[in-house]
Image 1 (cartoon, rainbow, N blue to C red):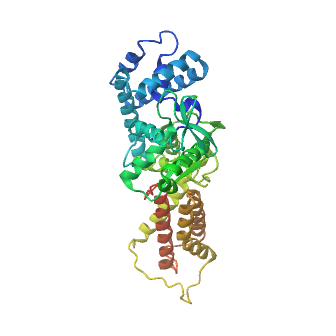
Image 2 (image 1 turned 90 degrees about the horizontal axis):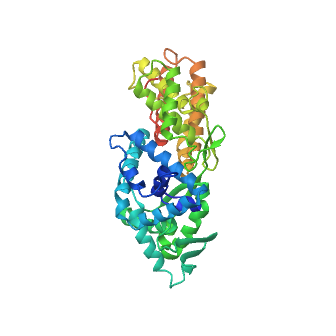
Image 3 (image 1 turned 90 degrees about the vertical axis):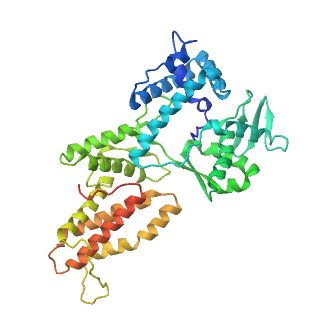
Length: 420
């Protein structure tokens, strides 16, 4: 379910913005529904989403600049909540297009959702939940609306037009989700700007669903920025995630002309994911293509390349299933500083995983993997592995680095190509 930020425009239904945005200016009026409904059915997914995106951005713009459009959007928005028959077909088509596109992106980045929750499922539940808790003092009526005075500030939960706001819907959603999954913990991940909004929602939940409120937390993160510009879906100056993936893939292909398309895709997705995850969650992300695909810096491809290097060494050894037992207490086994450094790093892996999980901080794991790979690559450059007098030990060490690197990337949702 989409969690909107607290500004007034965000509470206007996306479809209303799309409709008015597509038909704004001369000719806007009775034919606007037909215009949307009769959009060619043979459009591809990308064309459909481009159509919706451009219309949405235009609608958001006229909402801010045109009072007539603002009133029209509010009117359409109310009709949507009232399930107006003229709008139902448009709403169904728009939702279908969006979900089809989302599924394509999710598949590409390896994301799976067990269940979608739509506003239409919780709107009436949220409205009724609020109205049922007016007499007991949790909510109060104010100038025709129903508000909650708690948390950091007062917020409207049911408008004077008598429909639920996002606040009421999110509160009802908690109960619906719990019936489906009986969770021990519900984590709502949003941008920082939505933090105050959820403080109020959780404060209201505390009085109605105290147990669910205690199980629920809002984890916030910074914005992604490109070339010092904040990406905004409302103003239209957005950089699509799909474009980031495609552009990363194109740039990587320029450096690895022989790399097959499947590996290119794995490395491109890894580059973009890692570039987001290596930053502390609280900070804004300054995305850079140069850094994200740099094979000598703190990047996904660098980690992936190091893993591929370990696998190349193992393959060349012709003992991929090496069963040698290495006794680190052997007095005759003299370890180089680079080998000791790798062993020390490997011993920290479990602790790092715990810290990253407890603090919702994947950047901790990213930093560990980068340091481990740096230490292995230094060892690889300075010491012979195959054919050395410590071949069994060094192969075992190489395999251990490869396994830990693969496990770490897996936890970050990044694949590990065997060859690059």
